[in-house]
Length: 183
Image (cartoon, one colour):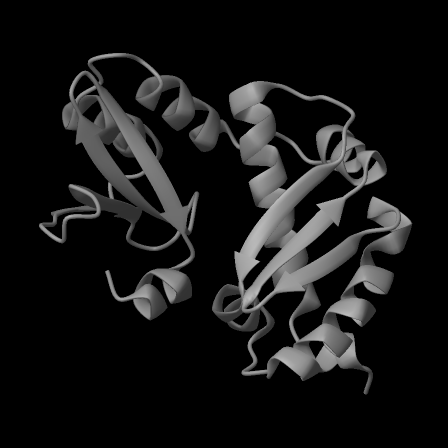
């Protein structure tokens, strides 16, 4: 069995696609090189592994080969426990042409980008897509609310919302990253 079957290359690839697609929804498509930064822990979570820096470097070399046909020559580099994937224009274009914009994410970004957006406005977007929405008010100093779809459909990310003056900001995490980071 080869390495990509033992490790979840598809999960890491899908996360990279999600991040590229999120950026394209926010800023529009441009045929350009993108740099995506990941903590080592996040990559291990996505791969379903607990690899050392040295072993992860070997695995990411294989991962870049795995992506080559669709994304072109993806490179990566490491700074201590932080990794950067350098996605060439071919990969950015592949995501733009081959992956549909998630309608939920479009509506969410459109809503949260409005000045004076409220938690009610954000929840309306979530409830347009499912009745099974979890919204927790949190007091960890990092953000104000955690919102997600209970069953992960249509979106499995955890949305961490922070209200500051007349606007809202967000970060979204996979479930495993959210738990691992200890928010």
